Length: 220
Image (tube, rainbow, N blue to C red):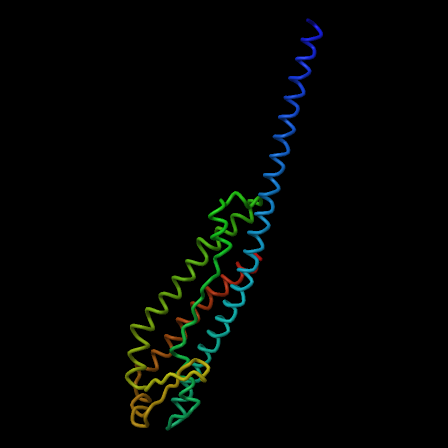
């Protein structure tokens, strides 16, 4: 009987060892799958953020052009008695509203798989801060500028200018003004204040854009 008992115990030990080995292998396979998924998601994030960085830097450069156009336009109105192609181009820039549309495929994938896929706590936290706070906060700045444009800039431009769509133009539009309207515009103090406010609005959005740009760079 002792031999059979020893044999039975040995069989049980072998079965237990086999189960433990199988569990360990399964855990290893699951960990490997999670690591591969993490790598896939991080690559997607990197691609998204690279595109986001290029777009927001382009928007920042555009806002530089708008602020400069505001200054040049005020100088032009003070020193010229007739409109010109340069004046029309500068005026066209007043209607340009850069819009940042971040790529979120990586963040969507992370949300569907669970944020715990990202093993680095600091990285996971920074990803969440960018997509849940920085991007929405920057969007609020853009929305406020768009509201200002619709309520103030657009009506004033329509008062003085004829707008034509031009697919060959830099901003797909061509603004023109008659001599009589230009003479009215030169003495319209509200138009001068509007130009100053457009520059102010763009400077504020640009400042927030530069902060967002820095966060994108850090996360990359």
